[in-house]
Amino acid sequence: MSKFFCSLLLLATSAGCNASWDELEFTGYLAAGMGYQQNILAPLDRTINGKPLLNLSADLHYRNFFIESDDRRNVLRYGSGTLGYQLWHNDAGTLALIGTSYHEAVGPDLETGLGRVHIPEFEGLTLRDSDFSVGLRYQYFRQDHYFALELGQEIESHYGQQLRLLYSYRQMLRNWDLYYNAGLAFSSARLVNYYYGVRNSETALMRPVYTAGAGQQLHLGLSAVYPLAPDWLLELGIAVNGFSSAYTDSPLVSRDIGFQSQMKFSYVF
Image (cartoon, rainbow, N blue to C red; front, side):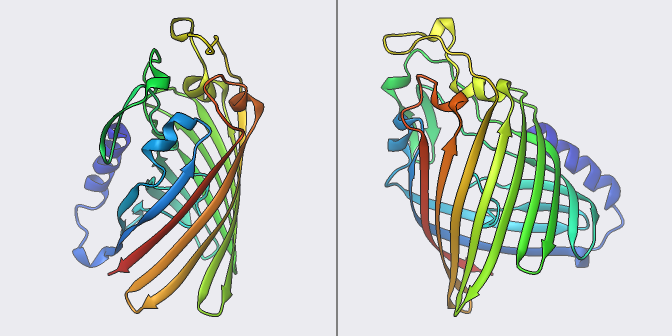
């Protein structure tokens, strides 16, 4: 992530040296809530499930540069922000250079928001680092419909590629804003094998060698937003993720489908 952030910083310095603070648009919110998740790597569940989630998020736009926090239309993951630079935009769509993270670290000892966690089931595994991908994102808006295509190249850990297709429909129902989300991700063999493969040095009883090929991930989700007060929002989310056999055939994987849900209260300023 540091490589891409430094590149953005250099571009911002050169492009914005004569800019005024009036061009800086800042919106943000603080959010706290609870979440529940079933990961296809079941030993990871106890580091997430039933734990309080503290979410501190802000959106920042400066000329064509932006930092985006969680987006209720941006499916397949929770809790990962995006750095970007708009290459082109009009009233209907945008094309941007982006950097974001899609996968958390996997290994016997992990750092979490609640401290260091040891996972006995993963003893003997080499740590798989979290990733950071850079690429292009095209977004298209038509009334309440949202379409997006993302193509990313990972630059820090596995150096794999991912193509993501996203669709979201927004419905206003009384005071609720409902977002019906669907996504499909195509991941290269290098990406899938990095997180779900088992090397010769990592084998154990009930954990044979496994080499993964390219894989696909399907996401279906529903998000809902309700205003509690002028500055307060209630946000709810539920999602189901399905995985192809490249993922589910791995001896590290415990289930075929992942599940996510989240409830949080947000203060907007």
